[in-house]
Amino acid sequence: LKSMFSYIIGGAITLVTLFIVNLFYRFYLRPKMLLKYYEKQNLPSVFYPIWGHYNREMQNFEKYNDYYKAWKDISKAEKKPKAWVSNLGEDVVVFPVDPEFIKEMCVHYDYYEKHPKLFYLIRRVSGGIAWTEGQKWKRTRKSVSMAFHYDLLK
Image (cartoon, rainbow, N blue to C red; front, top):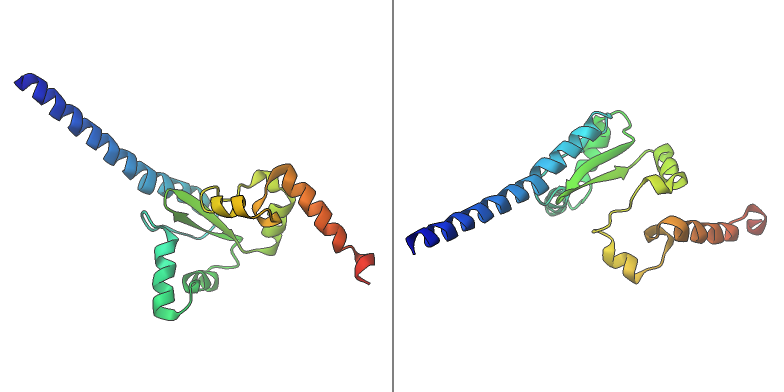
């Protein structure tokens, strides 16, 4: 009976240890490694464990009444970055700023993924062009662009 109890305790300790290691990897180590990848491309990045940039933006709103104060400070400190990078939970989010980079993202939309967790509900509720991807995005963009043709706007 004592040996069975020690196996159960050992198994429980192992499971708890694996759970903690998994959380450490998902919310700290993996986002930190991904941010290093973007830093090598000269993109300014900010890392905040677990909550990511959301926590910082809420603090900025309470203190300065401006969610994006930190981003404005980064843009003043860095020489015209293409984008800013930060973590949000276990994911890394790229905020494009440079118009040419935004244009590239719109032209090569298949190379870039919209944040799947953050916009899950919005994509289910809305069928707008901002939340669609792939062939549906291409069809929607094509039909909308016809409405803004130069000859129709004259």
